[in-house]
Length: 199
Image 1 (tube, one colour):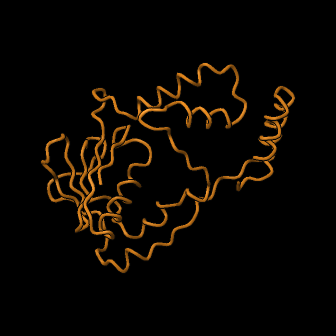
Image 2: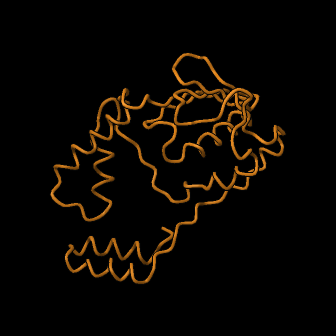
């Protein structure tokens, strides 16, 4: 399996992604390679896709709810194929909490410190090791990240859906006060979101 990121290793939730890939490679007995762009020197397909969506969105005068965004994302490209989107909060799982007990606080190596923002290539092995390289040549530094290599323990994952934060009553009031400036269809959508926070 080869993964390609649109941002450097130190951004967003890449530590969680590193844990997931290490766990997945070990429990499924396969190898994965994760490629990150070189900061300031790479232009990825993801950037090209975001640019395409942005160019289509700019042509819309007003966007009051999520429907125009979703329609634009799905329909903005025909070749090589249309984008596909899965919309369901149940798909968003708390992998950080589920995997945290299986891992050391930080990856360990005899020769160097784990600095994810410097790596452009990471290889996750069947044995559970994480091999990291600062360039696209396969010159790796091995790291140990898993606290256990016992497959039965690693497969016992307690995976739950992410709990979304609640919104205060004052913020809900602020949002509702904006509805006097919006079309009724947008207000209906906002009310649906406010009344059904788990949807």
